[in-house]
Length: 362
Image (tube, rainbow, N blue to C red; front, side, top):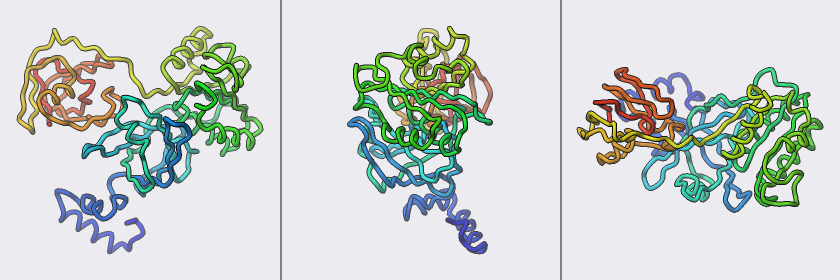
């Protein structure tokens, strides 16, 4: 919005922001309208629908700070629940280059944010990060493409499908989607519409818990792939879905010698284990003045045990919302096993375990 203002006025806005330090103009602009902020990305919900009883699909119009995304990427979405900002990763499922963003979120019975989003209303404002992730279509596009998804994992793969159709991709595309039953199949009408628009685009519905109503039935198998895309061995395959589907696909493609042709995305991580019995040293949270013996737990849990409430999201090292500055000491990344001892280093509290004495700027 400020880009539309005369240069002199823009200069006054910058001056005003300097005078309003330490809060900056954004902290005051958002009191008038959250979408006016200049240095953060916000989005306003413009449409909401429920495709199934346990999902919500909503459209978001991003603020001017939004720089777009590549099909398959994700954003870190922030919502405020009971006065606390919560962050989760979601993939836009519209075509690359589309103005508004579309998200579909499945409610997790234990998921604070996913359950909160089921009640999203038109007019709500959410925070957005720049798009991120390497799960994207290569350029130039492969001649043959298999898009495969399960449940709500359809979102990044659907973005790829919509993008390929919008581009008029000349090669063959098969979209193989797994759902429990026909009633659980997300975007059935939209996929049919894509197939009607693009002669080389074919949709195959597989139902794991129903014997009728689909093109295929039962769990993923090589027979399913051969029926859906007999040429899958010469194709590039893009997959996002629940852990059992991902594991089965990786095993099959590995046995076929095709691992390099399988590209996957997932928003869950393997459970992490921590050796508390080997813990030593002390942890100091500098700004708060809190200090405690190292319990061997991740620093996020140690901060919470010390009475602090650092911002966090996934607790699995995926969303990066718990990133803090480590000013001294060494930590081990519980996901990779890597030990780092650099001073003034940004770390993720949820997967960082102290190795001896550690100081955090929190």
